[in-house]
Length: 266
Image 1 (spheres, rainbow, N blue to C red):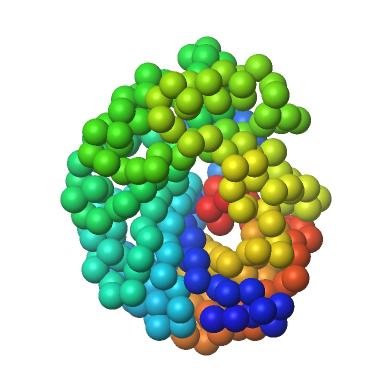
Image 2 (tube, rainbow, N blue to C red; image 1 turned 180 degrees about the vertical axis):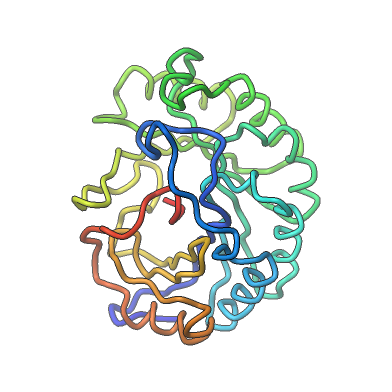
């Protein structure tokens, strides 16, 4: 698929839930969020069928996100179903890693190829503060489990406030270098004011090279994270929603007043 700016759209990010087992300060309010009704969230069967339609339009790369995807019941079955779609060449997931130790073997067996893990510091106390109670030892166990089963390359997503030269970011980089991990620095973003930049070590935030669509947990196909546009697959049908998203994909991001990172998938 080519959009009107001649960008090849072959990447679909699928948010499977707005739920998360952490409350990171830059992502969620301290006292939680108003959760989607279960009836509004796409079933695993609906997600699989939408992915099949997307593949017919040229999507060959899928990333599963959340919220936290590993809290979604049936996530391993979904991975298996998606990997079973002919035409999918790359199947990945972004996770906070808290539950990864328990899922790594099953995810790999189901077809997951690689994984991104969020880690903004290697200091246990700082991690607990950023995540409002998270246990970093579980993340380290998850990383080791992913290495053992061969979910590679393992990429570490490190959110920075101002610079990748910050103390925590430098320590994360050193940890990654010692443990054969690839690090990506993501400057803290703001949807409502349109503050974003290109990811250091990745392509995210580079509008000229953007090749992605997003499917939210409640069935909106979004052409851009920093835009309010979204097309309901239950209203339009998957085929028409995808077409509309590609046809109306903006040249660059602006701002988003109708969504949040936890329910779009970042």
